[in-house]
Image (cartoon, rainbow, N blue to C red):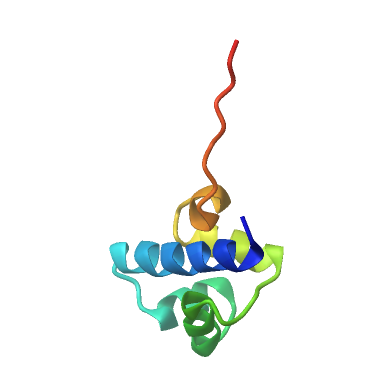
Length: 78
């Protein structure tokens, strides 16, 4: 998967999770410690963020980083 594809998946998941939790961009921005325009850019897929911001986003949305970035869990075969 290309980097842009991952970024697009994160952008879609971020907006979906935020709206499912009935949270505004401003509310999420305050919880994460970034500006509302930054959240808008993350959701549009036009800005990159550091790992610690991704972790804070996941925490603020009560989810995992894996769900936020759209990573599928691999199954262990025993």
